[in-house]
Image 1: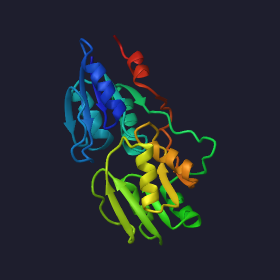
Image 2: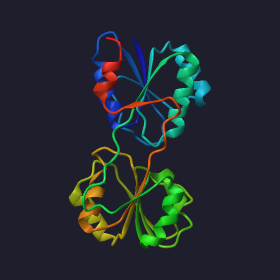
Image 3: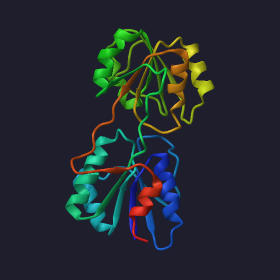
Length: 242
Protein backbone atom coordinates (compact mmCIF):
# COMPACT_ATOMS: atom_id res chain seq x y z
CA UNK A 1 0.00 0.00 0.00
CA UNK A 2 1.36 3.42 -0.98
CA UNK A 3 0.31 6.34 1.22
CA UNK A 4 0.99 10.02 0.61
CA UNK A 5 0.64 12.23 3.69
CA UNK A 6 0.19 15.95 3.21
CA UNK A 7 1.86 16.90 6.45
CA UNK A 8 3.49 19.60 8.50
CA UNK A 9 1.59 18.96 11.73
CA UNK A 10 2.43 16.93 14.81
CA UNK A 11 -0.36 14.51 13.97
CA UNK A 12 1.11 13.98 10.51
CA UNK A 13 4.47 13.04 12.05
CA UNK A 14 2.86 10.56 14.45
CA UNK A 15 0.91 9.01 11.59
CA UNK A 16 4.02 8.78 9.40
CA UNK A 17 5.87 6.98 12.20
CA UNK A 18 3.03 4.48 12.64
CA UNK A 19 2.79 3.77 8.92
CA UNK A 20 6.57 3.63 8.50
CA UNK A 21 6.62 0.77 11.02
CA UNK A 22 3.75 -1.04 9.32
CA UNK A 23 4.88 -3.94 7.09
CA UNK A 24 3.87 -3.62 3.47
CA UNK A 25 3.26 0.13 3.63
CA UNK A 26 5.25 2.66 1.64
CA UNK A 27 4.67 6.11 3.14
CA UNK A 28 5.83 9.47 1.85
CA UNK A 29 5.28 12.74 3.72
CA UNK A 30 4.92 15.93 1.71
CA UNK A 31 5.88 19.24 3.34
CA UNK A 32 4.87 22.48 1.70
CA UNK A 33 8.17 24.18 2.53
CA UNK A 34 6.57 27.24 4.14
CA UNK A 35 8.57 26.85 7.37
CA UNK A 36 12.37 26.87 7.51
CA UNK A 37 13.84 23.76 9.13
CA UNK A 38 10.53 21.94 9.72
CA UNK A 39 10.41 18.93 12.03
CA UNK A 40 10.89 15.98 9.71
CA UNK A 41 8.71 12.88 10.03
CA UNK A 42 10.08 9.33 9.75
CA UNK A 43 10.27 7.80 6.31
CA UNK A 44 10.58 9.44 2.93
CA UNK A 45 9.95 13.18 2.69
CA UNK A 46 9.32 15.46 -0.27
CA UNK A 47 9.26 19.25 -0.11
CA UNK A 48 7.38 21.83 -2.14
CA UNK A 49 3.97 22.07 -3.71
CA UNK A 50 2.42 20.03 -6.52
CA UNK A 51 1.05 22.78 -8.73
CA UNK A 52 -2.55 22.80 -7.57
CA UNK A 53 -5.17 20.07 -7.82
CA UNK A 54 -4.12 19.04 -11.33
CA UNK A 55 -0.49 18.67 -10.36
CA UNK A 56 -1.41 16.66 -7.29
CA UNK A 57 -3.67 14.40 -9.36
CA UNK A 58 -0.81 13.79 -11.81
CA UNK A 59 1.48 12.93 -8.90
CA UNK A 60 -1.02 10.49 -7.39
CA UNK A 61 -1.28 8.71 -10.72
CA UNK A 62 2.43 8.70 -11.50
CA UNK A 63 3.40 7.42 -8.05
CA UNK A 64 0.53 4.89 -7.92
CA UNK A 65 -0.71 6.25 -4.59
CA UNK A 66 -3.43 4.17 -2.94
CA UNK A 67 -4.38 6.50 -0.09
CA UNK A 68 -4.01 10.27 0.26
CA UNK A 69 -4.05 11.58 3.82
CA UNK A 70 -4.54 15.31 4.31
CA UNK A 71 -3.03 15.97 7.73
CA UNK A 72 -2.23 19.62 7.12
CA UNK A 73 -2.99 22.55 9.39
CA UNK A 74 -6.73 23.18 9.96
CA UNK A 75 -6.37 26.55 8.20
CA UNK A 76 -4.64 25.16 5.08
CA UNK A 77 -7.92 25.44 3.19
CA UNK A 78 -6.45 25.60 -0.30
CA UNK A 79 -4.40 22.43 0.26
CA UNK A 80 -7.47 20.57 1.47
CA UNK A 81 -9.51 21.78 -1.49
CA UNK A 82 -6.79 20.59 -3.88
CA UNK A 83 -6.58 17.23 -2.11
CA UNK A 84 -10.32 16.72 -2.40
CA UNK A 85 -10.33 17.63 -6.09
CA UNK A 86 -7.32 15.43 -6.89
CA UNK A 87 -8.75 12.45 -5.03
CA UNK A 88 -12.06 12.82 -6.87
CA UNK A 89 -10.32 13.07 -10.25
CA UNK A 90 -8.14 10.00 -9.72
CA UNK A 91 -10.31 7.77 -7.55
CA UNK A 92 -7.63 7.71 -4.85
CA UNK A 93 -9.02 7.29 -1.37
CA UNK A 94 -8.86 10.49 0.70
CA UNK A 95 -8.71 10.62 4.49
CA UNK A 96 -8.69 14.05 6.17
CA UNK A 97 -7.17 14.26 9.65
CA UNK A 98 -8.06 17.31 11.75
CA UNK A 99 -7.35 17.59 15.45
CA UNK A 100 -10.34 18.88 17.45
CA UNK A 101 -10.70 22.62 17.86
CA UNK A 102 -10.53 24.38 21.21
CA UNK A 103 -13.55 24.59 23.50
CA UNK A 104 -14.45 27.65 25.54
CA UNK A 105 -14.22 27.10 29.31
CA UNK A 106 -15.70 28.88 32.33
CA UNK A 107 -13.91 32.20 32.78
CA UNK A 108 -13.04 32.55 29.10
CA UNK A 109 -14.04 35.75 27.31
CA UNK A 110 -14.03 34.69 23.67
CA UNK A 111 -15.40 36.46 20.63
CA UNK A 112 -15.68 34.03 17.72
CA UNK A 113 -15.31 35.48 14.23
CA UNK A 114 -15.34 33.79 10.81
CA UNK A 115 -12.24 35.40 9.28
CA UNK A 116 -9.06 37.32 10.03
CA UNK A 117 -10.60 40.42 8.47
CA UNK A 118 -13.50 40.15 10.91
CA UNK A 119 -11.01 39.80 13.75
CA UNK A 120 -9.20 42.95 12.59
CA UNK A 121 -12.48 44.86 12.53
CA UNK A 122 -13.24 43.82 16.11
CA UNK A 123 -9.83 44.34 17.73
CA UNK A 124 -9.98 48.17 18.12
CA UNK A 125 -13.08 47.77 20.30
CA UNK A 126 -11.24 45.49 22.72
CA UNK A 127 -7.77 46.93 23.25
CA UNK A 128 -4.70 48.66 21.87
CA UNK A 129 -1.95 46.22 22.90
CA UNK A 130 -2.62 43.10 20.86
CA UNK A 131 -0.96 39.68 20.82
CA UNK A 132 -1.35 38.25 17.31
CA UNK A 133 -0.93 34.46 17.37
CA UNK A 134 -2.33 33.88 13.90
CA UNK A 135 0.67 32.64 11.93
CA UNK A 136 2.90 34.87 9.84
CA UNK A 137 0.51 34.71 6.90
CA UNK A 138 -2.22 36.29 9.00
CA UNK A 139 -0.46 39.47 10.09
CA UNK A 140 -1.32 41.39 6.92
CA UNK A 141 -4.99 41.65 7.92
CA UNK A 142 -3.93 43.87 10.84
CA UNK A 143 -1.31 45.96 9.03
CA UNK A 144 -3.39 49.14 8.85
CA UNK A 145 -4.74 49.10 12.40
CA UNK A 146 -3.67 51.56 15.10
CA UNK A 147 -2.25 50.22 18.32
CA UNK A 148 0.75 48.11 19.34
CA UNK A 149 1.14 44.49 18.23
CA UNK A 150 3.13 41.54 19.49
CA UNK A 151 3.70 39.17 16.55
CA UNK A 152 4.81 35.60 17.09
CA UNK A 153 5.80 33.18 14.35
CA UNK A 154 8.26 30.39 13.67
CA UNK A 155 10.03 32.27 10.86
CA UNK A 156 10.46 36.02 10.29
CA UNK A 157 7.28 37.50 8.81
CA UNK A 158 7.24 39.58 5.64
CA UNK A 159 5.30 42.74 4.89
CA UNK A 160 2.73 44.14 5.19
CA UNK A 161 2.90 44.27 8.98
CA UNK A 162 1.50 46.61 11.65
CA UNK A 163 3.68 49.68 11.97
CA UNK A 164 4.06 49.56 15.77
CA UNK A 165 5.10 46.00 16.54
CA UNK A 166 7.46 43.61 18.27
CA UNK A 167 8.29 40.26 16.66
CA UNK A 168 8.99 37.10 18.66
CA UNK A 169 10.33 34.07 16.79
CA UNK A 170 9.43 30.91 18.64
CA UNK A 171 7.96 27.46 18.13
CA UNK A 172 5.63 25.57 20.46
CA UNK A 173 4.92 23.74 22.64
CA UNK A 174 4.48 26.65 25.05
CA UNK A 175 3.85 26.60 28.79
CA UNK A 176 1.22 28.47 30.76
CA UNK A 177 3.91 30.11 32.89
CA UNK A 178 5.76 31.27 29.80
CA UNK A 179 2.64 32.60 28.10
CA UNK A 180 1.49 34.38 31.25
CA UNK A 181 4.89 36.04 31.58
CA UNK A 182 4.82 37.07 27.91
CA UNK A 183 1.37 38.65 28.21
CA UNK A 184 2.36 40.53 31.34
CA UNK A 185 5.74 41.68 30.06
CA UNK A 186 4.15 43.27 26.99
CA UNK A 187 1.06 44.54 28.82
CA UNK A 188 -1.23 42.73 26.38
CA UNK A 189 -4.93 43.54 26.68
CA UNK A 190 -6.35 41.37 23.85
CA UNK A 191 -5.30 38.08 22.25
CA UNK A 192 -6.11 37.16 18.65
CA UNK A 193 -5.68 33.55 17.58
CA UNK A 194 -6.98 30.97 15.15
CA UNK A 195 -8.84 27.87 16.33
CA UNK A 196 -5.92 25.60 15.53
CA UNK A 197 -6.64 23.16 18.36
CA UNK A 198 -4.08 20.92 20.03
CA UNK A 199 -2.06 21.14 23.21
CA UNK A 200 1.14 22.61 21.79
CA UNK A 201 -0.21 26.17 21.58
CA UNK A 202 -3.21 26.12 23.93
CA UNK A 203 -1.31 27.54 26.92
CA UNK A 204 -1.93 31.10 25.74
CA UNK A 205 -5.68 30.53 26.18
CA UNK A 206 -5.19 29.42 29.79
CA UNK A 207 -2.96 32.42 30.46
CA UNK A 208 -5.51 34.79 28.92
CA UNK A 209 -8.27 33.26 31.05
CA UNK A 210 -6.20 33.67 34.23
CA UNK A 211 -5.45 37.30 33.40
CA UNK A 212 -9.03 38.10 32.38
CA UNK A 213 -8.10 39.03 28.80
CA UNK A 214 -10.55 38.92 25.90
CA UNK A 215 -9.74 36.47 23.10
CA UNK A 216 -10.73 36.92 19.47
CA UNK A 217 -11.00 33.37 18.11
CA UNK A 218 -10.99 32.92 14.33
CA UNK A 219 -13.09 29.93 13.28
CA UNK A 220 -11.72 27.26 10.97
CA UNK A 221 -12.57 27.38 7.28
CA UNK A 222 -15.16 24.78 6.28
CA UNK A 223 -14.15 21.52 4.63
CA UNK A 224 -14.93 21.10 0.92
CA UNK A 225 -18.45 19.84 0.12
CA UNK A 226 -18.82 16.13 0.75
CA UNK A 227 -15.57 15.86 2.73
CA UNK A 228 -15.55 14.76 6.37
CA UNK A 229 -12.64 14.51 8.78
CA UNK A 230 -11.43 12.17 11.49
CA UNK A 231 -9.89 13.63 14.62
CA UNK A 232 -7.11 11.22 15.54
CA UNK A 233 -4.30 9.07 14.14
CA UNK A 234 -5.95 5.88 15.41
CA UNK A 235 -9.02 6.69 13.32
CA UNK A 236 -6.89 7.14 10.21
CA UNK A 237 -5.14 3.79 10.78
CA UNK A 238 -8.50 2.08 11.29
CA UNK A 239 -9.62 3.28 7.85
CA UNK A 240 -6.61 1.96 5.99
CA UNK A 241 -6.33 -1.58 4.61
CA UNK A 242 -4.17 -3.93 6.67
